[in-house]
Length: 97
Image 1: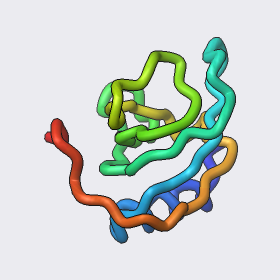
Image 2: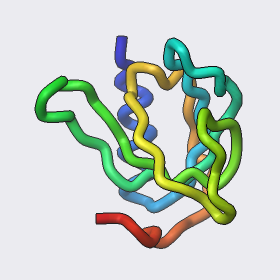
Image 3: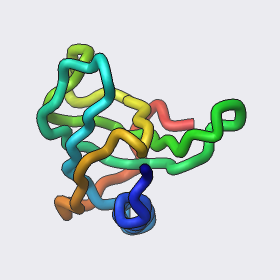
Image 4: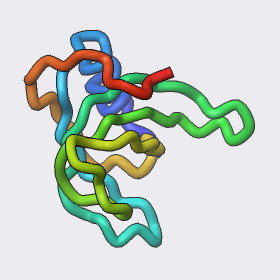
């Protein structure tokens, strides 16, 4: 079940360009710790109707090694178990289309 509070926090963070800290618990993903990054877009996938968001992850747990300085990741909102705005302001990251 997707939490409207998670959607609101993501929307606010994107609008304000503020970083977030989140916990993500997708089945089969061994990375269960906190992730820190800059959310850039929140959208509905056209073929699955899942609500996704693009995050430039700068720190934290990950199922794939992070590139030094950060890396782009796509997340499904339904697997976010907690999220809060960390507060530091960011610029749009390189590679964002």
